[in-house]
Length: 193
Image (cartoon, rainbow, N blue to C red; front, side, top):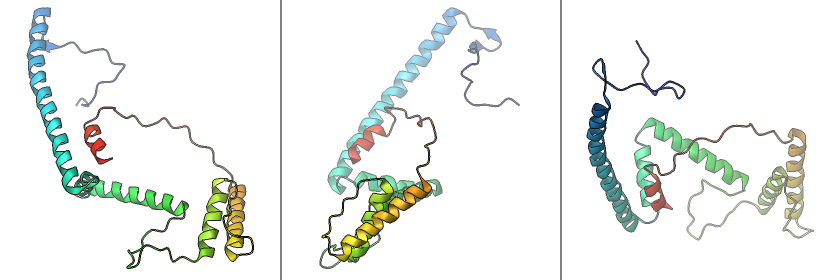
């Protein structure tokens, strides 16, 4: 049984045939015109559907705010196991980046504001360590005689030590993933930003 799918790029073009007979040039033109007419109808339907989707996206934005459409897309994604896995991976990635930047997450909103109750020495250490790991110049904003100043220095030293011990890993030379500009979601995604 022959494997179905896309033809190989290096495969010779397949000659179109009606039944077992080769088409004449007139037959090919006639068939091409029939397909062109059907294609134009389907293309017009797609344009109308895209416009309706964009217009509805504007209604969602006015009713639910700038991120309303993103919320709906998340709900749709979460309705499948694959979408759930993608969202969990994205949340883990964002949490990792926030941890790197010493931004606390997973806290409940407070009655009297969103004050970070982490001790200043811990925050100073974490920021110093982040600067050291990132290979940045040390920028210690704390006054010299304070415990936060010394914590920041200790964190920076630990970050620099980890950087020197493990060093920089060479990046793999991967080709960027192919993206198709003008895809179906491009117009809708622009509404969520």
